[in-house]
Amino acid sequence: MSAVGTAERPLRVAIVGSGPSGFYAAQHLLGGPDTVEVDLVDRLPTPFGLVRGGVAPDHQNIKAVIRAYDKTAKLAGFRFVGNVAIGRDLTLDELRAAYDQVVLAVGCESANPLGIPGQDLPGSHSATAFVGWYNGHPDHRDFVIDLSATAAVVVGVGNVAMDVTRVLVRDRDELAKSDIADHAMQRLREGAVKDVYVLGRRGAAQAAFSPAEIKEIAELDGVSLVVRPEDAALDPASEAWLAEHGDKPTHENVRFLQEIAGRPPTGDRRVHLRLLTSPVALYGNGRVEEVELGRNRLEPDGKGDLRAVDTGERERIRAGLVFRAIGYRGTALPGCPFDERKGTIPNEGGRVIDKDGRPIPGLYVVGWAKRGPQGLIGTNRADSKDTVEKMKQDRASLDPAPRTRPAVLDRVGVGWTDWERLDAEEIRRGQERSKLREKLVQIEEMVAFLKG
Ligand code: NAP
Image (tube, rainbow, N blue to C red; front, side, top):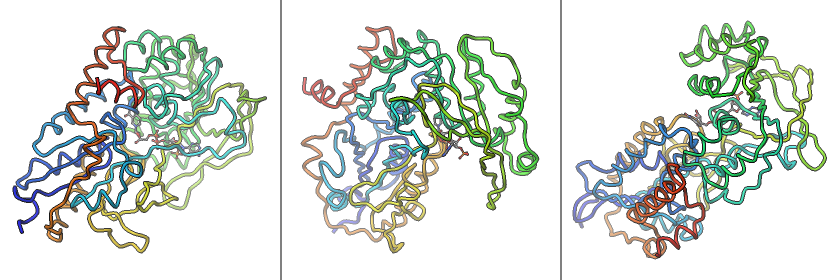
């Protein structure tokens, strides 16, 4: 029998999830001396995961990374199989039986809860759903939101919080030229939000946003970024922490916030960055009307970092919308181990492990499903490479018996040329509306279009 990885018996790999980590895994697997066939499987008919459904529509420069994925898609041995869901169209065990190695690149698709009274009142939303909705993700096509409130609260000071805040206050005509979904643009145009309170539970030295992201908010036309001096000031513990552990972006954030602190607002829309502040309860008659804020101080967490502790000080603000941007969370894939506490797939350096800590032969994980929802898109390149190295080390133990591609992939799967047709159609529809792209937002609509 021929060895695995030869022209007679190619190495057959399935990657589940076609976001950045899935594409980087494919890139590292293909183009080497061995003969490798990669099937990149996605539950949606469209590729690119969070680059399409998560990156903000006004950040097209970030979306340009797609050009690199397009190149990967042209490599010999690459195959895209969209519209196939594990657990719906075939089981993970069936997939594992059909391939030598399976890589899970399923990301983190749900949102962390706030865990405070009133969190489920209408008007309180996860950033995940809002982002998916304005990006035309089929999962969030029917998301219901009332944007008639004049004030909104965004909880969290990461880059997702910055995206949500920008979309709420950015000039509507500018936003309309992007690839934002039409259904969202219409509602945003009718919306009334003028004040956005962005809450960071810790201080300026612990803010998770990138310097470029917070500066972009301050530079938006007609928008003032309002920072109170007492929020930008560092307590002695943060000063010491910053001096010892602070990286360049953190120093830049602190410098910038201290520089603009105390400036009076000028525009007709305001973003109030409130640090050392947590929401403690949401109130309202049938929907969110008020948010109770608690003031925090910082204390050492015993692990070299500082944590927020409630001082008991309270304040109430009127706001009809709340978005929690406090981190994504993974969801269990049927038939696969899952760490409920971390919201990730348990693994050792990318090898998926069972409940006894033993590697499951041929099963690997990359990206957010592997390490949790942190890092920029590029972080996934090295991360996927690391897992692919482990896969190469494990090749010697592979069974050279032939593997058969599951018939369901050909029956319901959408290929790369199908995606190219969808892509061209979306761009054409966008041109009709003087925007970059108008996405098809329902899976049935995409499939119907492809069937002609
Ligand atoms: P993130 O960077 O981890 O930020 C989460 C924020 O939520 C932090 O400020 C965190 O504060 C806060 N938080 C967590 N639990 C909280 C709670 N119970 N109450 C109040 N605040 C809480 O996560 P993210 O914004 O979802 O972004 C995920 C990753 O995608 C990041 O690596 C991000 O840089 C990346 N991303 C990048 C871009 C871009 O480059 N433009 C855009 C979007 C996302 P603590 O620090 O106190 O925990």
